[in-house]
Length: 351
Ligand code: UDP
Image 1 (cartoon, rainbow, N blue to C red):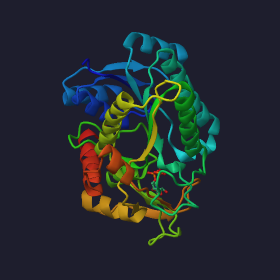
Image 2 (image 1 turned 45 degrees about the vertical axis):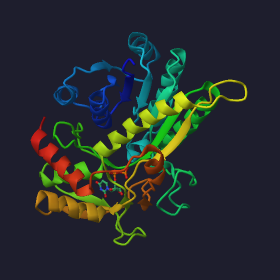
Image 3 (image 1 turned 180 degrees about the horizontal axis):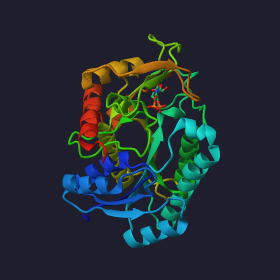
């Protein structure tokens, strides 16, 4: 059998690089697409080459650009798509919701139109556990819990899930939505990791930049939430566990499509599945601060500040469905994840 060719869309560079490495190492042909809005391209591509021993095909462009995507699909004829491309900062989405609806929703619609044109029907979608109603559900959330969001970024993820469900039902797409949150992005090789342009918005890279004295201090966004230490609880996960979940999901999708039952009308029933990809073990901001201090061997300068727009107290989900159906389980601890991030950051500082 010919190796499957996978197209990976991404705008922020991190998850796709790990997932790209794993797919390439697992025998897939990988094509990458990024608009480079937040990525050090040369560093990522050369690291991918060292890890995979391959020059992965790379296209610079935007998933909202129909003509660009058309050319890529015509040239590459991929068998499936892993769709990461989305903007992802809560505060930014509150300040500019148009930007988020345009990037995330219009980008997905354009991608689906092109996939439909070329009859590429298999898609893994990078969703988010932020689609859960954090006020009404009791954590850990399960895939059938109530859905609701509190800011435009999260809403775009929920809309994309609905969009994909409709497209699965009415246009025959086979889709798996992976709901996750708070990845820590460094590969154990120290070759791939988070190196955002400018000041980071996420907790772990921010903590590490303060530890490196590149930023004076970190503000903990409020300490009066209804949690044991008053700070928000999230479920942080090592990026390699997440990449593995994408690989196992795609393999599962292929097997499911192969074996799929025929509908009464004699058509192939499309697949649509949702999985939580989490550890099920949340940590508060203060606990993360302590872990980071243990890893870097010194205190990290911090202060308590106001709550951030759009934050919820606890976001932790139950990964049991992924364990039972995908046979996926996280292999790496949170301490390992922060250590890998610190090692990557120390090795690549200023890159
Ligand atoms: N956080 C914080 N200070 C920061 C960045 C983040 O206290 O400078 C908190 C934030 O309120 C949230 C948690 O750390 O509770 C994780 O935030 P992050 O932005 O990494 O991910 P999110 O959960 O918002 O997607």
